[in-house]
Structures are given as structure tokens and as C-alpha cells.
Image 1 (cartoon, helix red, strand yellow):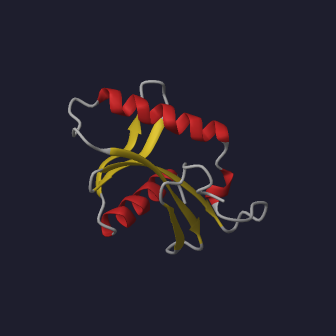
Image 2 (tube, rainbow, N blue to C red):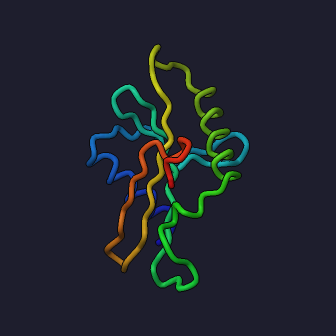
Length: 125
């Protein structure tokens, strides 16, 4: 699985779950990227998509288990940059950080795990 395919799968999953995807693979001014930006009701959802395939025998577990404090800080900084570049924002909205983990089983199948509000303290435990 490559990054482009992982983002496509995540987008399709979110749209089928009722989210409105407004950005995919957004380039921030500092060179970082936001994987997916979507709305769910009055919540702006910043989604980090992490993926791996099961033929990598050196790595066990879901890819989301590899999120580090440094990666989380980078996601938060990128979200702030994204918000600053928007011309209009609703008066009342919440920003939420989710992750979507994709574990590729074979060329056509992947396990999907959606962590809602994943960056909240204790959410990934």
C-alpha cells in the first residue's frame, strides 16, 4: 500500500461514514502535510492516516501504535497553519484530531481502525 492509496481508502471510509471531506493531502507552508481534513456536523476533523502491510514481519500491531509525541506535535502545528490560511470559519466549531489506521491484508483488503479524538489524553491507550 502506498500513501496515495491509503488516503483514498481513508477518504472513502470517512465519506461513507457521513463526513464531508474538504481536503486531502494538504501541503502546509512549513513543508508538512495534513492527510485529510473533514467536517462532521460542527466539528472540523484533522485526520492522520497511518498504514502498513502485513508482510512486514518486523512490525506487529496497528500502525497508529507508532504515533510519537513528536508526530503528534507536528500534526497540531500543521492544523494551526491550516486554520490560519482559511478565509472563513463558522462562528462555533470544534477542532478534533482523529487517526485512521490501515493494515493491508492483501492487494484488495485492509483492516480499518478509526480512532475518534485520538490525540486527546489517554485516547490511544
